[in-house]
Length: 227
Image (tube, one colour):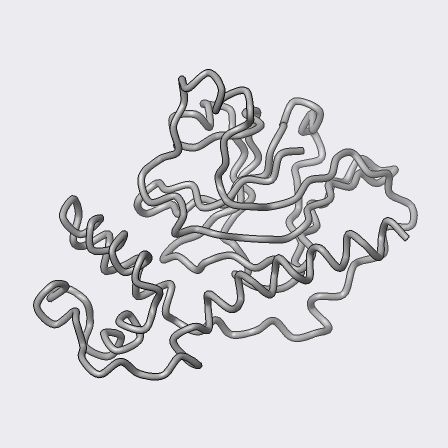
């Protein structure tokens, strides 16, 4: 029953993020293109799709543009690029019957704990609401000490250069908060779908408290799954 409920929650979360991905495809085109003058760095072929994003999202990217126009244009272009879906056979859960589960977690948007909200000593980074995600992560260890990080039904806003990391910090918001001993597991296979990552066998997995999706070009943390 718990597995069925968790699967339902993950499905709903993934659906919400995928709706964001595909929003430009199903929303009626607006009467005017509002970005010709406001966002000249944006490639002409994606301007129409940008103008169909929710207004609050457009405003965040335009605000970001005032700080770094190149970064904002690159993030928009990646977000609006339709991802190629992974073939179903590549999303099948590998045989983990002999493995033990070291840790589990769920991806989500960056968020403050209730204690952090009450204390008011920490804030979300600018534009963090642009990087929504959903999906469940499980860290397995096999009898021969091999380790596998399996991500189930991932759905994350696309970026130019997304990577998967392990961090000792359970809830990092910035690259500085990752610490110096984070582990780079490589490029994100796909912003959508189930996928696996090899974890070094010698790694002390108990020392790592989160899985992080980070945009490596501009050093932006998109999502965190506390373990």
